[in-house]
Image (spheres, rainbow, N blue to C red):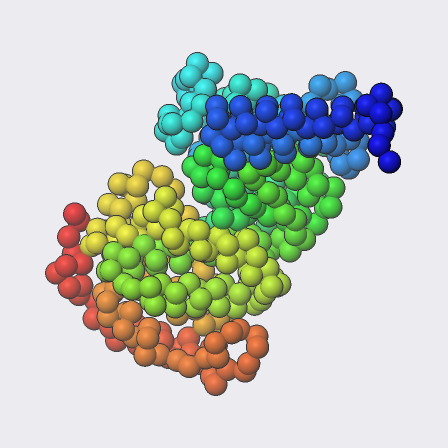
Length: 432
């Protein structure tokens, strides 16, 4: 049956088609102007994204506020800056706190973090402050992005200004002496707050370059998990949720050990077989340690485990990889840290995990070997040979029984390390 062009149904179809053509033209023009398919994806995602009702997030939000969430990010390093920028781009009222007053003045003037992200202009909505009280008062979520050695002090400093705020750690590491994870420190210093941790394969430079990335927010509070997803989730940055705080946090801390090992291995020019072996045995060590302290082993198969492990061990942008690479080329630990100019959490983590593994009788041969090289002046090549020759285990942890116990293997490897010569080969003793 032929319908007249004046028929209401025909007119409706024509109207919809016309809108589709105009939308397609707009996308084509945007693609040509801003860089193709990624620009189109961002445009469509933004167009379709619904602004959530903050009252359903389970945290206090002033209904008169023009933005859904008020965020403070404490720490102006690369990752803290990247997360603050994401939050601001998502429409949150976001303040990035930096300790140095001169740095804040420069950020306000140029909107560029010259030390950590010199090639990126930050979102125009992002605010900067060196006043800690001003930064955290009346905020909904406080993200902690300072080095692990400064987390406890930072929490103590904000304690007088805490009312309803939730606190989320972005820091991957373990506190010296106490072996406390960042979530442990939050609960010690601010026992009344909702808390969480974030971890994942999150190289800040790639996030700033809008390369698709993902992270995990772990918290016992479903409302806080939802709030963090709301603040940070975007077209290029996905935020997944977990309730295994310890597992997610351990993944982020432990992988730094193996990034040091991978950097060192690459300095020696190892092949792909060796790299693959190192990654998979590293994952086994991580899950073995995690289970011993109460984490879910399956968590290590996710973004905060194998995802972060892979990204950190294969990126020259990783600070821990860089430290390992310099050590593998013969530089001393002291000079490598000085040359890096930033905190490499893996150096401290190796010492902390080595101590705990021995206390708990956990077999962690890669960690034992790295400790011997970094702190006992053992030859990396000699230790690597001994590592290959010692102990027999099943391939996948928790699937098959082992021929020998963790404790027995740990003692055996410890004896081998003690017998290893301390004098390093000539090619391992230079600082250049």
